[in-house]
Length: 115
Image (cartoon, rainbow, N blue to C red):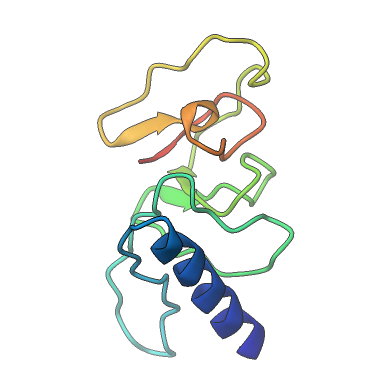
C-alpha cells in the first residue's frame, strides 16, 4: 500500500511540474461502490508496476493480456494491431485514441485506449 501511495504521489508531482492538474487514481475500498476514472492521456504507470486500474464497464486494464505497455483502459474485446513502427493509426470509437499516437505512447502496438 505504501508503494502505491508513493507511486501516486510521484506521478502527481511529475504531472504538476508540467503545469497540469492531476487527480490521482484511487483504489476501491472493500464493499464500496466507486465510479471508474478515465486515465490521463500519456500519464500511465508502466505495466511492470503492479497497481489496480479501475475501468468502466466493458473496459479492462490494458496490461492484462499485454495489450498495452502502461496501465490504461481498453475495450475488453480489443486486440492489438500492428507495431507502432508501422504508421497506420487505428480508427477508434469516440472517447478513445490509438495508444501509439499518445505522448508518450501507451502501447507498443496500435490499439484503441481511453483518451
